[in-house]
Image (tube, rainbow, N blue to C red; front, side):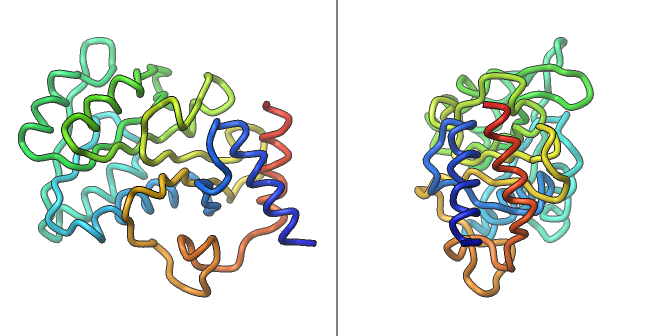
Length: 211
């Protein structure tokens, strides 16, 4: 019965984001989702060049900084005068070898919105992987994982009136990543640890109401 509730919630979150239910990995919130995306890609591409916009949330900037301290190549992509990602700076980062890029959909402090579909097209054309922190955009903007072109997307329940302490990472199965948490094989091996069933059910209910 508990498993059925979790899968119902997974379907509700997927419906809100325009994603297959199989891509929804439940985590403890946006911070864990961001860390999983960044460190998960780095774990399978130890020589990868990682980049992010200069105005990302600390839960993106700090994991990248930690990887930089252990010798990985990490760079910052500037924004334009409107606070949006500078597409020319993105192109330059890709020319310099960036293969993982993180760009937030909507900035939690300024409200500036990035054109994630355009960013994803540029990153994909260069053979890279795009992660977007969509925590602040979910249920406030039309957020569609499939249409966005992103490979990875972070969302959190508490930004849509759900409980704190639960979120999800939308994980395109084509992306080879190392799980951040290893353990009992929960979430199809993508996030070890016993699921917080009550919080997940609350996330699903909030997603259904938002939709």
